[in-house]
Image 1 (cartoon, rainbow, N blue to C red):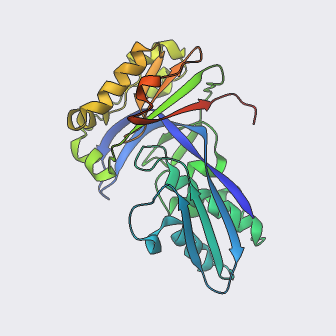
Image 2 (image 1 turned 90 degrees about the vertical axis):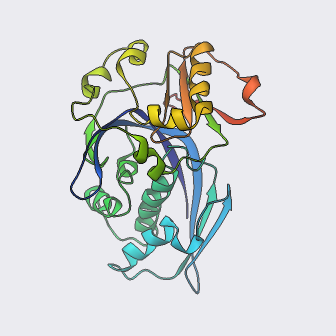
Length: 272
């Protein structure tokens, strides 16, 4: 069976404080994005992970998809499988591709082998795989708190906008991002700011990772500023970077970036 794992963007990201367990309490809005990795599971003589598409850094034997399979296999009598992953969601970009792959693989294994897991159970498993994995189980816009795994539905509809996503040739690790961020326990009242018109977000919604990442990688700051110069009503870095996105009222093409960055023009309409 085949499934399509979509990306997400963060609208705002407040790092509130560091927890005793080493994680940070956050406040952010997750919004699903129609950029997809492709996952397929096929029964096999032995369990293997076969990637294609964009290169995935690190040891493939430690890939999150294999960890997902073994997590469920510890509780259920799953047969050996080959997991095929065709990667198109940019890596190290703050788009949640790895977390999406894990969450959608949970759902795919559940349906393929008739495990009968309901949404709350899938969310419980997803939380064991990564902080934002659980978001992709329901896969609807949410205000996320805690370490990014406590969700409250939020009424955000971007279907009237074109989203332009720009991924520079820069990989920002989670460790690098958190090494530069300055927590702010008071946050910036994202829960109320997100309910206001998108045109107000530039002045009221921020990503706390931006100052440190922009200082280390000024080319990312320059991309955000270019999106505003080209008419974006809101632009931001997604998650811990390095991708930045802009929301536009009208269709736009950024030809000047095509030779130096990956530029994706993403359909935000509800259809499809």
